[in-house]
Image (cartoon, rainbow, N blue to C red; front, top):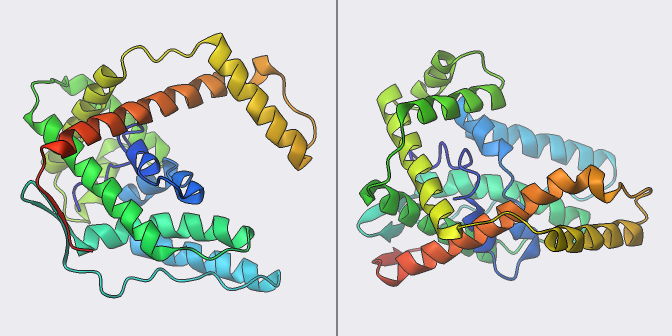
Length: 270
C-alpha cells in the first residue's frame, strides 16, 4: 500500500479524487487531508475505520437515526486496476474506499439518502488510477527535491499526526512494513508530483474579483441556511485565498492526469 500512506500529505495531487467524482457532489467534498495522514501514522486504518463507524452508529441509534451502512467490499478483485503494468491491489483499494465511504455515508445519512456504492467505487478507483499516473510521471521526471524539503515535510507530518519525532513516525510506518528508506523515497516522489502540478497550474494567485465572488456565494448560502452572523470579507479572506488556490491546483492536477491517461495503458477490473 505504498501509494496510499502519504496520499494526503500531498494536498494537491489527491485533489484529483475530488475532481474525478463528476456528478456526485457529496463524493467531491470528502477528500479532506487530515484523516489519511492520521491513519498513515497510526498504522491501524481498519481499526480507525471500525471505531469511526461504531461511534457514528452509536450516535445515530441514540438519536433515532438509521444505523450507519457498511461498505460493500464483496467481489472486489485481487487486482482492481493496472496502470502501465503497475497493479492497484484489492488491499489498497479497500483501505482507500473505506475512508471515502465513511465520509460520504455520514453526509448522505444527514441528507436522508443512500450511498450509491457502485458510483463511489468507480470514483475511488479512477482517483487511484490518476494518482498512480502522477506518481509514475514524477518518478520518470527530472524534477529534483532537496533532502531538506523532504525533512521539512516529514516534520509537518509528525506535527499533524501529534507525534514527537520523525523516529516515532518511522516506527509507526515500520509496523506496516515500510522502511525509512521506502518512506523517504515515496515522499520524495510525491513532492516531485506536487512540483509537476505546480508547473502545470502556473500562476494561481487569486484575484480580488475571484475572492469576492466566492465570498458572495458563501454568504448567500449561509444566509439561506440561517447560520447566523456572516463574517466579514477581510476576516475570511485568507481562507478564501487557500480555497481558490486548492481549486486551481486540483484543476491543474486533473488536466495533467487527463493528458497522461491519453497515452497510458489502463485496465480497470472492478
